Image (cartoon, rainbow, N blue to C red; front, side):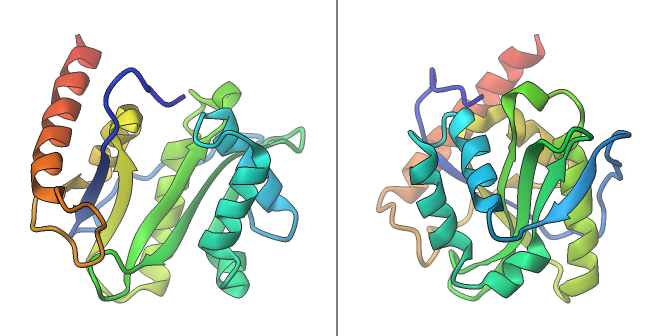
Length: 198
């Protein structure tokens, strides 16, 4: 679940070493499936259950805006995890982003349903996306956008080599106070992670 007890800030993380990452497999009984029509409802349900959206309908609209202008790419890069009972329990994508101006690859919309957290599904998803990155991308840069409410996910991203972005305001950022907010946000996350370890 999102921790909404702390102030919300959007955060960027980046790695210039996407070929260096830990390997985690799915537990027995789980499998990866790629997006096909209808799974956007499961995507929306997972994110709604996490508190990201107010309704499944809202989530479906976000999915359409994020992915359905390129459905063929979604069929190759938008992944779900299915449990042995057929339940769709996690999702993440390797997508393109223009936050910095040029189109760059990014890890996008990582989520595990609340009832299925603790099984190592997010770790396996990230390993799978890094494997895909090695197969389909030619560059050495990968980024993601997250938020202070997801500080536990930030700790996981750090294990995969992602570090806080502390550079200038990205070209397509809409936050006019980006530099000031970025400092505040990472200070907040650092303190929260420190508390979480004690």
